[in-house]
Image 1 (tube, each protein chain N blue to C red):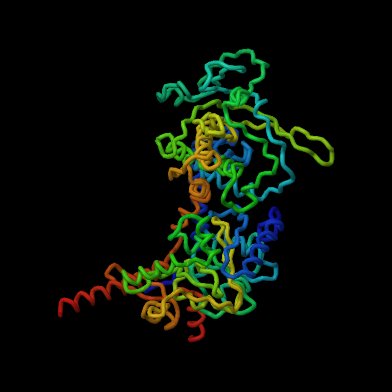
Image 2: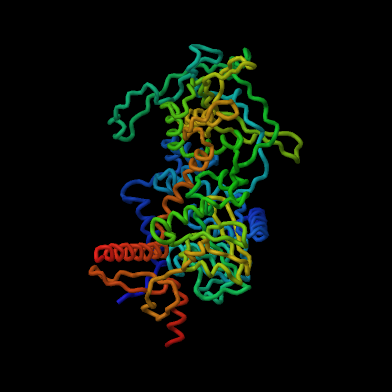
Length: 276
Length: 363
């Protein structure tokens, strides 16, 4: 692929993205506007994450790409192939071996380290968007730290359903300042947002980048009498027996039979290898 | 027994191979050439150039061929290619007043300097399927030719401007922001809005314009002028120290004359809407002018009546079909994890609700 620059994007564009990333790291949880480029894959399919990954990649990196926790979901395969082709970087399915992990909808089960970067694909970066459609208004609300609307929404959930009825993309407050959308990860993953790794969030279509630097405080929004609960299916993994991992439900026949298996395929496979 | 879902890679390769076969179709039928698409599907080519923001008929034709005629997919191919091209400068503003017009009509004056030129238009054709076209190899009757006039074809709005009957447009001295190089930001000024509209989806811009005609932010437009033709594109070459002509582009320009404004201090004046689009794309250019005018409510001191076409955030964030298509179609991607978390939540909520009902019944 000599026709394109290393990792597809030209160096000017990468520099522009790196500046946005640095600003994001400096102001954790703040959404930094950036001049997102058209990528050779559709908006909504990870173009933000891909641009962030492209701006972070060096030839020495080892890349892992997951979607729904799995390395072999079609879009993860497609994005991994893209970087194998355009950056010729090494790739891996092992969480521990990767230096950069691009993810959609999950945080790996295995704790990440200071030497790793986790890049999230973000569809709608604005946690207040479904409460207030106007970008002008939501930016004002962030500037004024005016998050009353969000608390009212959570309160209404409790009064209607008895608990906060948000199961994924559960809003968090970063370092006591910005309310942030952690991307559509299940709320089970929210505690893992406090991590040793640098976490970068890229929203291509919405032209926003934000970041959670290592060891930053990330608090899931809740009330004293209704504390945050990172729930999961009350089963062990049917393949590796893990009790503490997030599970996919797989329907096995048309008579209601189902099994629960780890959504993090590398985590599950590693446990089975270790047991064998 | 559950077998882990593997083989995403092979599935993708196979799907792409099948797609390539389907794209070609029946091999007993002759393959389309790029030149055939460029010459015979020129309006599709124009739309792809306009919404792809790249003036290159051959590449647009290639994109249409590759996309199996899916024009939004073709626009996407052009955009993804365009974004990789280096920018080595900007042209001078094109002079549409000096356009070599194939078509030029005004709905506001019966006759005017430069005349009314219908040009190659579908207007006034009867929309009857021409079954003769189904037979191939028909001779195309030659269109009668006249002597082109050398007379200048001045803009209609210039006549109105001379009497101050239409609101003036001061020259913008500042270099406009570039929508493709900076994130969209609000409030969006008019150059930025026009950039978004000219590359916006034709169907979306058309519907927005139509909504203003039906009363959602009505602004009484007259087509002051619609012109289609070629203009030269010039650029300064720093090494040479003077500008040279790079080539010509076909453009469609529409200027509308809209309802007047006025106040105690300002006597009434007509207002303007503006559309400029690559290629012969007059439906889009007229639509663009109407939506441009609707979006100007604030600078012209009008009321915001809450019409969608007056809401710059609504129009600009939703006009791009490459963005819209991508996000719409991404819901085809797996969402097992999110769905699973919702499943668990709803099971829990239902269990609690049913338990409460049973409790009540028992009491």
